[in-house]
Length: 113
Image (cartoon, rainbow, N blue to C red; front, top):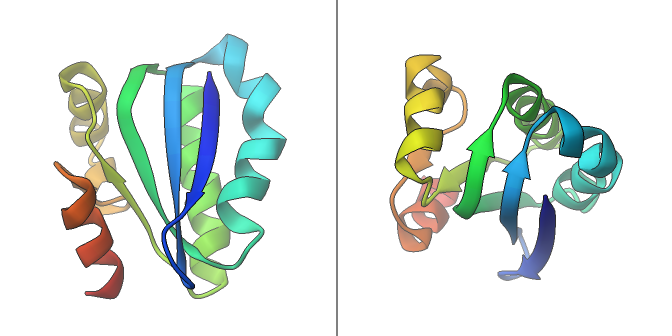
């Protein structure tokens, strides 16, 4: 998996995720991903449109990063998950902890709501 951070404004970043977040890739991206999502103290929207697969280790990484952001007063909102990834998140009721919406505009709106 690879990711790119895009600044959305003074209080939020967008993290564009591409590829697979599984047992092979989590170890390679865990530290830089967590730092990118949480180090700035900003809220984040995670663009999951190009994330093809999400394993339990990937879910743990997302939850861990979201916890750090939350402790610093920010929020994390996911958007654009492909059907298989969205199904995993909703089946585990993670969409209650990590809000999952369809579009970037909805995600950004949830940060302020």
